[in-house]
Image (cartoon, rainbow, N blue to C red; front, top):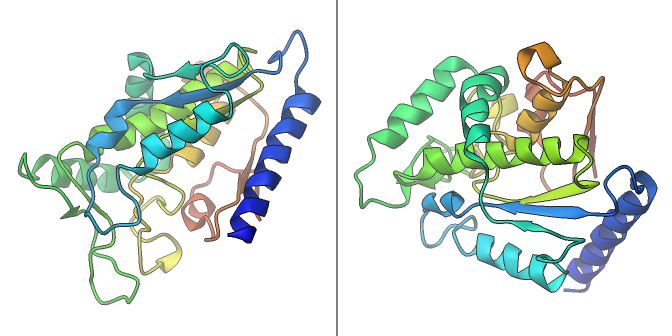
Length: 242
């Protein structure tokens, strides 16, 4: 518990430093945006899964305790529909192979309406064909919405509406590569699409292609597991794992 407490404090300091260093009256104004969407909880995993629906309200609760819902920390509770279209039609095909996207969409669409915890990938921590990554009929929309939230966050930052954005979304994404099991991993790590990589792609894509036209980005992955999915998607200039 002491480690978790120290880690939280370190993350809080990092956000404050970013807010102070990169914010000004003309850019960001010290605002941190919180972006979430209830559609992300249409992704229903197994009851005993580490990655399940309770994580999202817990994240929002923590955000509110930190000031979400105020002028300096606005809480955006629904992603704009236009970003879902951009995510699905323009950005996801740049991050993942078309065959992978089609396979996941079709597999999820075939899940019976009332079925939850359905195996989406053939993976396991033991490498024996288990079922780590599970979902439900709403998993595809949830995963696209998670990507769309990251794109909206990029636009808000580049457009000077905030200096940084926290996307409280699920399913997670940093183990999702161009194809299943990035870098020959034995598990897809509860991930379907890679929202972080999609945000990076959107940020550096030319304006003529609907992107933001930035020259370069950096993805800092601070999970305890290596972001192998991000490492296999050719959109990053620098990848730092802490």
